[in-house]
Image (cartoon, rainbow, N blue to C red; front, side, top):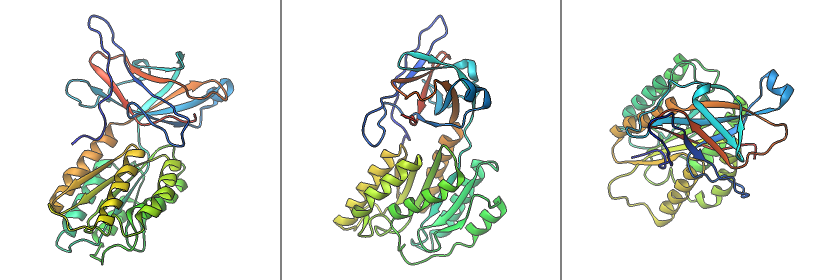
Length: 317
């Protein structure tokens, strides 16, 4: 079960190779990429402000054969081009953008302890430096904001109790989460939603009407949406509920995230481990661009034999 499409890779033996990721920037409302690299406007350092502006790429470097992430890289290991013009790379660092974790407490009370255990492990794996907010699909939606320490976050997770199926749909909650993310003022962010309710947490009747607004909110925030939904092997969900699920899958793809289906509560941990691994492997690559330039035909390459670049977007366009 992969979290991303397979990117193109071009390596040559006998000399330093450069593997490129090419981005297409369409004129549509939402970005569409050949691979998963995400770029957004960064606040440039002082020297960049004097000569130009900066953009920041969110990218993953991995071994093309093993698909294992490569984190031991620096400024000199990357090549960035826009419209065939090389850009000066300013910095490379491990990404630490904020994450909102939303938990559906409307499933079976017997499953909730496994959900809590998986959520706590996920928070631990993200490390103490990354801002994390947690909430539920029920009210109150937000339980702990980014200012909360890890002790408070774990306490809130321990206090979760089973509730009736959520009154808010996943789409509606994702839209609310973008407001929380806006307060963090980060270039990049992720929303991770754990769905346990059979059908109601996905569609809840209003899904189709909410999708345009939710999609616009998620796209405008730049958040990457992940959904882990537990479903019985043979669902009794109605057609409208499944249509809501299809729309939610499309929303996760639009945001360059992923919709993951699991069949037992014990699988939440493995699914969240995969997401945590991806988040931990992401790099921020800041590079200098001319003032008021537009990102066009952007290519990011790495000077490591046998390596390739994956990433997640580009802005400003």
